[in-house]
Amino acid sequence: MGTIAVHEFISLDGVFEDPSWTFDYGFHPKMAEALGAITGASTAILLGRATFEMFAPVWSTRTVEEDPGAPFFNDTRKYVVGSQEPKAEWGNSTHLGPYDPDVIRKLKAENDAIYISGSGTLVRALLKEGLVDDLHLFVYPVALGKGKRLWNDGIETKLALKKHEVYDNGVVHLDYGPAAP
Figure 1: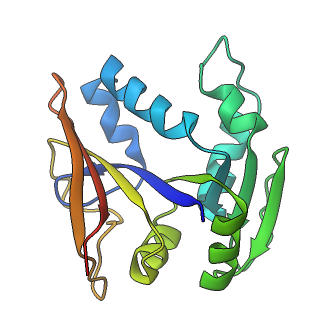
Figure 2: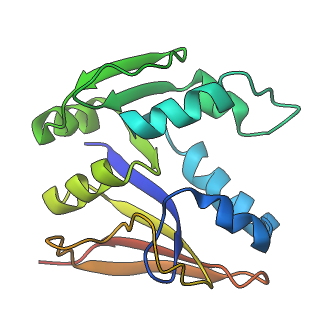
């Protein structure tokens, strides 16, 4: 069975929406290394429809000269969860339909390692079902006070800290896995 690794840029108060607020902190080289390790181990990308529609126009035209992550995002097989067909097109993409945990379990069985970025609604559902193997939170030292939060009412998830890193820009990388039963 494969694994699912989620990566989120998140504020102290749990906001992950529109991470343009992260730009004030810069992108520490060690963060690039951590993300490169996560994506480098992945053989597929799983995204919610809204995140897919945001990523497709940005990444589909990006070259390796512009961003070393471009080949991963453009060449890797992508799966999209959503009740509606995505409005954007992006090579190597398959629409899976509405969220179904059994479809995700089958996808995990068919792939060694699946990467997710953003996709809060999808990630919350996966956490609730216990389908996330690695939750990589890059926590920024700011409380935004508004915006979509990764954790909302009704989501109770117990996790175990696997690793952590602290960067000079104040960001903390926390890698959580499922807590032992």
